[in-house]
Length: 106
Image 1 (tube, rainbow, N blue to C red):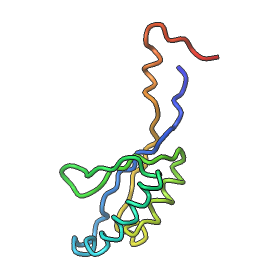
Image 2 (image 1 turned 180 degrees about the horizontal axis):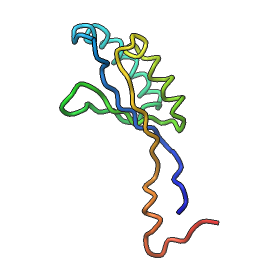
Image 3 (image 1 turned 180 degrees about the vertical axis):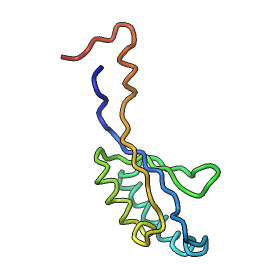
């Protein structure tokens, strides 16, 4: 089966151990402003809160995890080493190629 190209990065961010909620809340206003800038620049396509624990999930419009990592580390919580991200390359749903009548591309 043909491999699926990476078209976006799923970034799941959580607060690092050892930081008090008050420390994180002090940085959040600037974090939110800079995250909105990334959204308005088209770099973050979607953003969500995690359910059941503090954190975020972003769909990022880049194909290289290193580029996503650098972008996220430059946000205020990243610069303060308060948040870490798991970066997962994602792409089109490859099993759709198995639909009846789909022909492999040369």
